Length: 74
Image 1 (cartoon, rainbow, N blue to C red):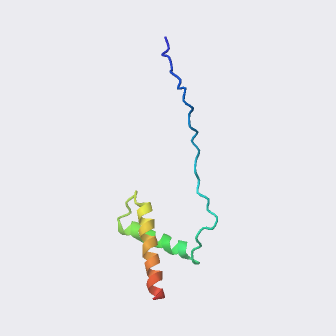
Image 2 (image 1 turned 90 degrees about the vertical axis):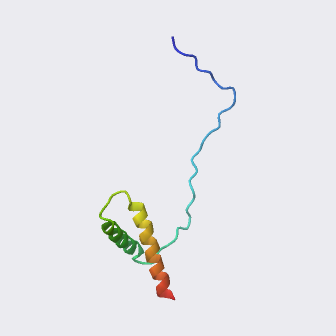
Image 3 (image 1 turned 180 degrees about the horizontal axis):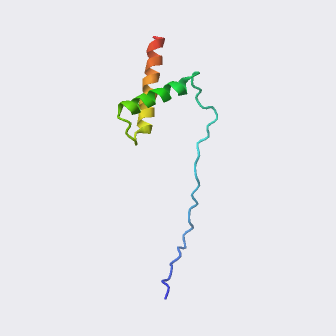
C-alpha cells in the first residue's frame, strides 16, 4: 500500500535564479591577469604545492599585485 501524499492547498512559490547583470566589467591593465597568475603560482609553490588553496592563493596574489601597483603610483 502506497502512503498518501498530502497536497498543500497553498500556492507554491516559484523560485527563479537571480543572475547579476554585468554590463561593464572592470577592465584590468595589460598583463594584469598574467602577473596575478604568476604570483598565485609562486604562493602555491611556497605553500609546498598543497592542493585546496587555489582560490586563496589567487586572492592573495591579487592583493599583492594591486598593492605593488598602488605603491608604484605613489
